[in-house]
Length: 376
Image (tube, rainbow, N blue to C red; front, top):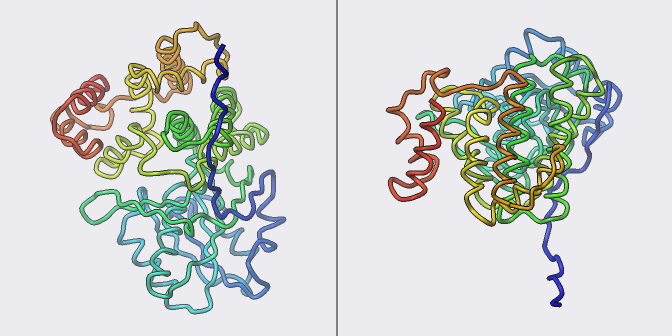
């Protein structure tokens, strides 16, 4: 009997220096994570968090006049370049600033990364970055950033230095997030984890092992969090699941994460759909499409025992069951949605598919057209 091949691989970790989680982590530890005793920090956030919650005033108060250099509170969904330009200009004008503190979901966190990138282009150095996430989108877990240019197209940048230095998960901060946003970004985290399972450059350890753990936790705790939105234990466990869903890729990410993400970018900025919702639109259908490929099905089938189901022994059948389970989770969370709900008509499908797949015909193009047509 021939011996099975020994596992082998390479994992390239990011530059993350610290990740804290729990209650009151910001209050208790923010100042200790500044890069120096004389650091000046610039806060990057959105208007809703700044005006509808006490979070930004709390961070400003913690920093005090000694460490607070300013706040930009006008980052909008999908990080439009106009707001990015304004924030970058404000940072460059103040030579005392050495730290960015992003507070919020993917848009403020990605914007802070993009500001650091632009700062480097002009000053030849990157800014220290502390991320305080309030959603489950996991933008804090990668060295990539996305923003929307003036044509409405999502622009991506990726370099090791854009990974935040510190991530601070604080359940007291996440409690301020509206429930639909919280739950839908949980599906975004699920999207990260599922697409990492069959990503060609994702190593078995730690990436796929972390992702399987994340999937199990998201399936267990998203429904619980829906029933008890203020439960800090559930919030913290979901924050850790979000971290596990994407951090494990480290610097192994080559190109896009997967088809569901590519479709999400094609749907998000151009049509004003939040990325949590784009994952609700695309992930189930993409999993069912990927189940038709033997290698992808083999990887997807591994998920089944982690969501409380028994393997049948048939990879493609098991992969389809994974898609069915995600569909059931969406319905349980009240997140099932269609393209029609977002005023995306059938006439837009060819444009979306061209943008997502970079093709205009062929088997992939036809398959994805069919996939999106099923979501009308």
